[in-house]
Image (tube, rainbow, N blue to C red; front, side):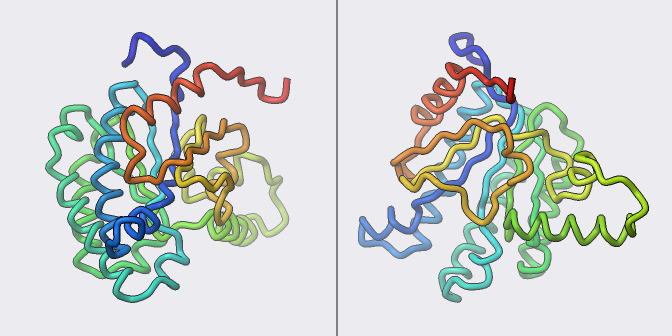
Length: 237
């Protein structure tokens, strides 16, 4: 953990926007931007580990990404996932730092069987770790998460039980994650997409960067955490 930064966020969520624009600016194919973004994630994750951030949640794809992107780009994105999860499974950084890998979303409905087996292997290889947590949101959208939670609660409670904040949280896909302290979005578009983690962002600090994701390196990640550390969180007081 960095001795120079106090008030480190426990949970950092990242919306890594800008892969396709990064590729377009360089005359590359969209999936080459996704590949560069995956390589950059390794550097950013390592920086979060060095800083002592316990939970990092990374939005890899939305449901619309899986349903609406051109077939060739979607296939290339799935290939990036395959390569990256194979690498994570045997990563020295992951095992040395005892990082547990979680994958959240409707990826099992959207991904091919071969890729699902690779992801499950990665999850299983790290499921005993409890020191750090790396969470991937794949085929995930926050509005879909809330709708699915409401359906489950309606079916379970049938109007007889009192619905509390804990009731809602316990039915979310992200039920095992703590609230987000810091949301980082790259790519120069300061907004939230598709209801991203809307329940868990309710008290989060927001950090928007003009930098496209493949260029958002360790130094820029540290700057985001330093910015967070200087802010006062009042929680409505």
